[in-house]
Image 1 (tube, rainbow over the protein chains, first blue to last red):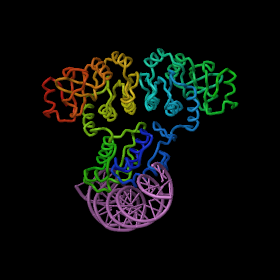
Image 2: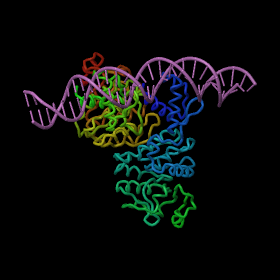
Image 3: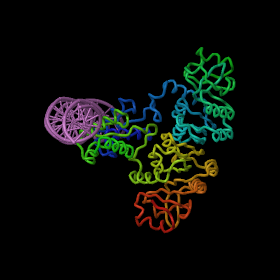
Image 4: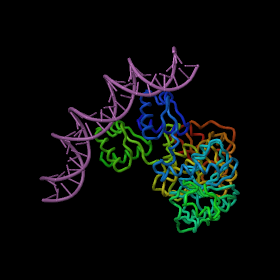
Length: 249
Length: 249
DNA sequence: TTAAATTTTGTAAAATCGTGCATTCTAAAA
DNA sequence: TTTTAGAATGCACGATTTTACAAAATTTAA
């Protein structure tokens, strides 16, 4: 067995079990404990796992669906995710769109909260399945190769039939005047349907995407109930949204 | 043996097994280890594989890393997958169920063949998205935590609306007398719908699951058109199926 | 505090790697 | 067809990486 394979195995074990024992891996892979110890140290150095006395545990800052380095503004998105969780008491029906911000929301979802989540995003569905109390319902349809989400008539029809308590709208560009806009026409249709099917609309975005706009409009600012960014709610940048009556957290 | 041939061999080997040992290739192709080392370096430079100490591993599958050691009877399933691809000319509408055998079919799907694939399985959808020419349509519904597939009324209703050229039925137990059976009632409902919606039914199974049965019946043997196992089509174990008129490959 | 488990440190052996060089092979030019 | 430059190959050898084992130091838990 190659060293690289061992490393992959360990990462995967940590991901699944959240914690591994050094002796267990050693026995399972039939190599000395020293070797595994070295592997663990190596992975810790790389930040892939956290080595502890007797084994290793999951490093909560690591994303397995995308490498964390690949997630732009990862730190900000973790902050946003934590704020988003405050809106969920338990028992809600939620619709989540795609995007890396929502991926963080899904990944870091508190393990002790139950909810029913509808999503058209493959990576987000994968993450949600790691949470035993969450009922995940995938919104089917033609999958987009790059965004890994369902698009098209089937998906929209399904969404129309949902009566959700709230939705988490990720990605897109937000401007206090132009509202929420998107680059892709198909995605716009999907998000419009989501906004219409939700009692409460929550927009999540990194501050960088505020005050910019794209070609197509999803909804106006007033249709959004809550805005979540990584900034302090008192930051001047979000002031225009508060003036329009949005809750900013 | 020409250099090009070696390179192709190595790429293919990595594609199928996800890893190769330098010494193995050297012995197999009867060239010095130095040469293979140089080949590996070359392919790494081109980004085709990832060279590691002692050999090389695949670098293509990123997102949901999939470990071949964890797949029971992996070798057999690779054989089955290769046979299954022979049934696809291009342009077909295919329904694929879940299971690790079908996962191999999806993963190793020839990159130059186009097709429309419906699937209720999250891992299989992820794999299919790696293939640019394949249009993947996810069959939505309530996701099962362990099997990572859509189940329930929504999924079944979607399947009923499909008119597929063929379906790849994975997993389950197969007996020439009792037909195809399953352990889980929900899964049975789903598979029944798939069988009804497909012009041609292809069952894929490792030989070990032949001549065993579970509680619930999906369909009788005669409803299956083609049986694929890792065995030679002349193997006595598949004889009863040939007698019933099935094509065995 | 003590005993057990775990880690660190040091060492040695095995496997693997990179490089220079002579030889062989390949393919383009004559 | 023959010639020849350039690429590919095999071999030798020192460098590096990986691994296992052992002893001493440290941490953990009772």
